[in-house]
Image (tube, rainbow, N blue to C red; front, side, top):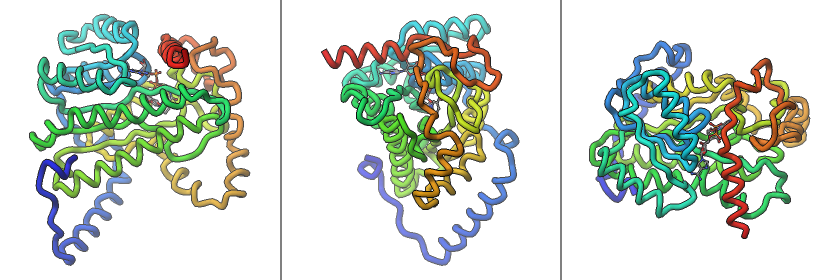
Length: 346
Ligand SMILES: NC(=O)c1ccc[n+]([C@@H]2O[C@H](COP(=O)([O-])OP(=O)(O)OC[C@H]3O[C@@H](n4cnc5c(N)ncnc54)[C@H](O)[C@@H]3O)[C@@H](O)[C@H]2O)c1
């Protein structure tokens, strides 16, 4: 799609490219030692920023952060109540709620996505930043996952990203400016028992982001249209209620959102939270399988999902490393998703 609309990159001379490769390698080596918090941030005041799944969890928190920075925040969510909570939180903080625009959209429905995207463009103009954040999890073993839940996971976590990007990227290309953020997961880099559909959808996010980034580079749009892929470990938003994070700790939503905001505002291509996981994830897949399963057992990987209940039960059994249950956002999003699945099955 990118290629269709603009002329493509012409291959430069080999000497120049070799120098550029050395320069960029040195630059990224130096950047490894500079915390993102110290890097120059872009100004998002008055920019149009769309966040899917902004009615709960980290999407809600990002919506408030961008409002604080003076951006125009467009929230898409299937959960109207959750979006109203986001608005209420903004009002309580005395943020400018005129800058908050709520649209009820079911991301399983591509027609609805394209229709509401047109409406947003008519009402607010083109997007500056698109954040595909909404997500669902089934949390069942491979053979137990109903087909409807597999479909739902792929529709929300993965296919919807293609439709939102197809709806908003052409304007970014015309303006030679934009940013596409994909909220994937550490589960997009490693397999997890009880998360096969979720992991597959998150691996797909990473493949999509990498391919899109290459198409943008081929079209000489790198540096003009940025992409950021976000890969956090388990967070106490309630989505993964009942999970045992093994030898690692659950992450607090505000900590994760700090890191995501820094990555977006510095146009970073990737953010892994916690950041040392990036090294772990590079190393783990290169282990021989029999080693991997021993390491996996050691870190508690076989039991991560053993007591998973998402938001469907009180999270009393949740090992939250000091995070109180009350801190866990318990809106009804997963139950709504459950209803969607149940209805699909009828
Ligand atoms: N919570 C974690 O441990 C964790 C870890 C890594 C990555 N992530 C990813 O981060 C993102 C946000 O997770 P969260 O923990 O804030 O989850 P959350 O459940 O708090 O928020 C997800 C939001 O997506 C919305 N949503 C679900 N289905 C939808 C649909 N069909 N149409 C429109 N909106 C829909 C929900 O209503 C909800 O508001 C997800 O993509 C998730 O996979 C979460």
